[in-house]
Length: 255
Image 1 (cartoon, rainbow, N blue to C red):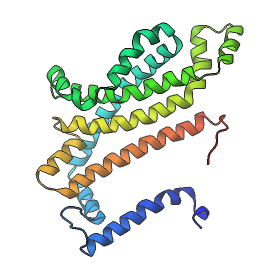
Image 2: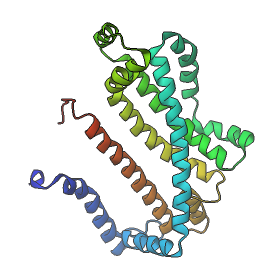
Image 3: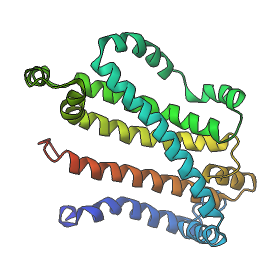
Image 4: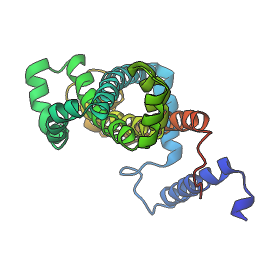
C-alpha cells in the first residue's frame, strides 16, 4: 500500500504521523506544554514572529553568514582538494597538516577565534568556513584519487593540457565525490552557524534561540530549530537535484 503512494507523500508520511502524535499527546496532557509546546502553538509563535518582521531580519543575517562561510570554506576545500589530489608533492606538503587540523574540535577553537577576531561577523564566518572546508577537501581528494588510471593515459594520448585535464577529465570523473562533499559541507555549515551565533551574535536565528531561552519562550526556541531544519533540508535537496541532473550518465544502484 505504501508503494502505491507518490514518493513525496511517502517522505511526508512519518513526519506528519509524528506531528499528529505530538499534538494529541500535548492536548491530552500527557506531555507538559511548558517543556514541549504543541506543533500548533509553535506555528502560532512562528506567525507572530513573522508578523513583527524580526524573524525575517534574523533569517537574513543567518543566511548571509552561512553563504559567506560556505563559499569561503568550500571554495578553499575544493581548490586544495584538487591540488593535493593531482600533485603528490602538494599532498606531502599540505595533507598531513590539514589532517592534523581536522581532528581538532571546532568548539576548542572558539576561544582563539574570539581572541583573534573578536565576536563580530568575521569570527562567525571564519568558524563556519572552517567547518565547511574539510568535508569538501577530503571528498574532492578522494574523488580524484579514485579516478581510473586508464583515463589519465587516454588524456595523455590526446595531449590534454593541465587545464583540459582538470575541466574535461578530473572534475567530471570526481563529480560524485565532490557533490557528496558539498552536501556534507552544507550540513556542517548550518551546524557551525548555530554555534557561531550562540557565541556572541546580535542577530540571526541562533541569537533568536538564545534570547528565547533566556525568557523561557520554548515555542520560540522550537521555531528557530524548525527554521534551521527546513533550511538544511532545502539546501540538501537542491544539491541532490543538481546531483540528479549532472550525474544522469551514472548507472548506479538505486535500491
